Structure formats: structure tokens, C-alpha cells
Image (cartoon, rainbow, N blue to C red; front, side, top):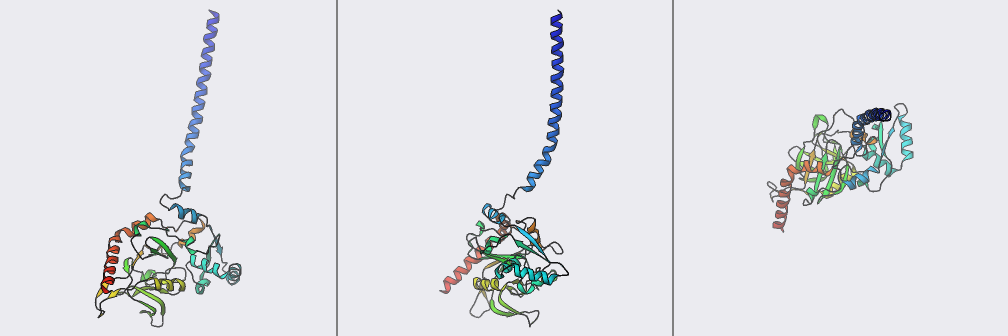
Amino acid sequence: MKINLNKKKLNICAFLIFSLFLVQCKKERNSVSAQIPSVKSDIKEIQKPKNINKEDSISKSKIAYSAFIFPKKKKDSAMAVFKKKYSEPERYTILALNRLDEKNSWRADTLMIPSKFEDNFLKYSPFPAQISLLKDVKKFVFFSYPIQAFAVYENGELKKWGPTSMGKKAAKTETGLHFTNWKSKEATSTVDASWKLPFNVNIANRLGIGWHEYDLPGFPASHSCLRLLRKDAEWLYSFADQWILSADGNTLKANGIPVIVFGEYDWGGQKPWRKLAQNSMANYLSESEMNKIIQPYIDRILAEQKKREEVIMAQN
């Protein structure tokens, strides 16, 4: 009887010890579980957006950006260092990425500098390499107000991109779908007759708006037109098709190529390219985002393209 009682006491002690062990384990498990949500949250923040083209993402993620800051009191000497440190082609790339031309480089207070310099400027593109929605569109030009940049596509493949300076706040460029009309190797501004506009391509005849070469000061500064670097303006001049008019010039028979001007600039906010130092994909427009912008206009674009082809065929 004494032996059985001892065994019973031992069993009770063992049970109590095991129970305490379970309670302690539960506390530890609850403590760990309490930390899991914040860990998941951190993981979610660093995940890449799902709608970014994988190939583009890999290519662009290899290019990081740092800030070259000009001191206010010794800006001239800092600019001299900048010009000495970087070659002319490298400076061209840097200024273009900061929406500046050489003439307006003095305006810079901070420049985003890429970690490596590519011969192919497409490597820095904030636009997707392909847009499947445009596969049947022979020529297409896109201007983004938010990032002050343009893109050119042929059958959905990116052919060119570059910086622009669009309409200032008091004279915004009209957004939406346009078509190229007439073009001139040198036009005269309707705002000031002394302003000469090389390689001008009109996209809104009634409003007198077009793209052409002119100053790029690093922000939207034009009187509604779409300013370009000289090389880009010359290239786009050759690329763009003019409208087709009747023999007497009074009737529009077919439009030129489609042009979409999209979005709104963050007036008074941080310049979008400044965000590249924290995130090299900050200004990137994914294919799905581009599709949403283009989709409402795609039927009209294809219809106008077909109409143009029919007019040209009839003329031949």
C-alpha cells in the first residue's frame, strides 16, 4: 500500500511538472507569434511590384542612383568638378536623366547620377520594353506629364525614350489622344515671333501645340508645347508622319501617327527623378499601367491607322 501511494505521488508530481512545461511553451509560442505580423509586413514592403515586366525589372535594378549635390556658395567650383569628373557623353546622360540640357545645367542644385553608364540610353527607360496592346500599331508616341518623359513604340516595341519639358502650370499641355498633323524643320512660335522652334511637329493645329527642340530647364516650363533635346527632336521629326489633306488643302483625309499625352505633374512636389536615389524603379511605368492608359483609345488608334492605309493605297 505504501509503494502504491508513493507511485501515485510520483505520478501527480510528474503531471504537475508536465503541465507547467506546457504553460511555459504556450507563453513562448504566443511571444513568437506576436512578432510574426511585423516580420510579414517588412517582407511585403520589400517585394517588387507584381506588374513590372521581369526582364525590365532585372535590367533596371542593376542601375542604382546617387545624388551629386551642388553647394550654394561654391556652385561654380562644384560644376567645374562635375564637368571634369564626367565625360561629355556621360554628362549628356546625366543631364537627360535630370530633364536638363547643357545650356540649363547651371540650374541644377542636385543631380541623380547612375551607378554605371550605358551606351544604349534605353537601359535607363522608365517605360516597358514591350506593350502587347500596341502590337498592331505601327507607330505610337507617348508623353508622360508626371515624369516629364516621352516614349516611342513600333508595333509594341520600345524604340526610343527621352526627357521633355511640357506645359507649365499656367499653360498646361492638353492631355488625351492626339495625332501628328503638319511638320516644319523650323517653325515660329505663336507666343513670340522671335522664338524659333527647330524640328516642329504639330499635334493640335487649333491650339498650335507641337513638339520641338527648345530649352529643358528641369521642370515643366513651356507654353503648352512639348520641348525636346535637339537630337530627340530631329529623330522624332523624321519618325512622324504628317496628316493627309485633300488637293485643295481644305479637307482632312487621314491623320498622322497617334500621340497620347497623359497624367498630371506634381506641382510643388519633389521632382520625380529625385526619387531614383531611394528606388531605381520609382518612375517606372509597367506594361499593365500603360495598357490601362492606352486601352480607352486603342479602337480609335487602329481605326485611324486603317483609314490612313486606305487613303495611301487609293492615291497609289
